[in-house]
Image 1 (cartoon, rainbow, N blue to C red):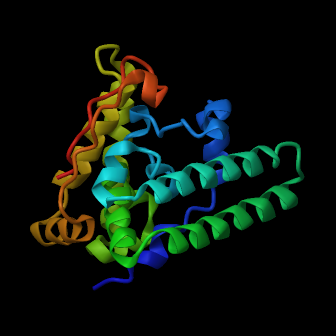
Image 2 (image 1 turned 120 degrees about the horizontal axis):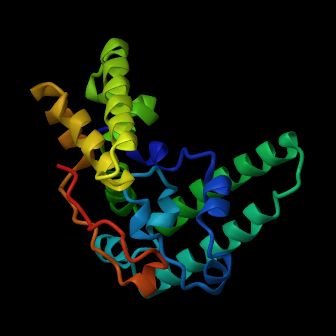
Length: 223
């Protein structure tokens, strides 16, 4: 069994993500939910825990859900506090936030919940994680040359989409992600499936709940 829990929270740029997503007031008040529009984009595992479908899959207790809300609000406030800091100070702040997220998840979830959250984290980003996470690339058995080929495939798909007004950026991203998966060998595909675990369907949230646009993509299975 691979050592999943240590890989789960190695996301040093949570501060940037928190600032980019917006809706800070909702995050502080505890009703912010990671929107469907971020599906396919690497995120911080803690933010995945704001989604009701993920909470149900992990069987979080009401107390755990309340803790998630407090932790996200706290991290959001700390991330906002990095604005205007020097590069050195901001980097130190991001690292501190990353380490705190690790500690929070280890204290909040049991081993089984942490393992499943990692699987959902990878399914949320999808096969693009083969390009963004070196440990995933290594585990699946993709060589450096193959990885370059996958990157070129993605660039080509996204470039074609930019030239076509008939293809939305979201559709292009999903098509490119599917292309990456289809390019894997049978052995690599088997390793990917083992790594990501049982397929999970990310449900389409109520627009008012998710605070996303009315054109959000439907939830999807990743394999």
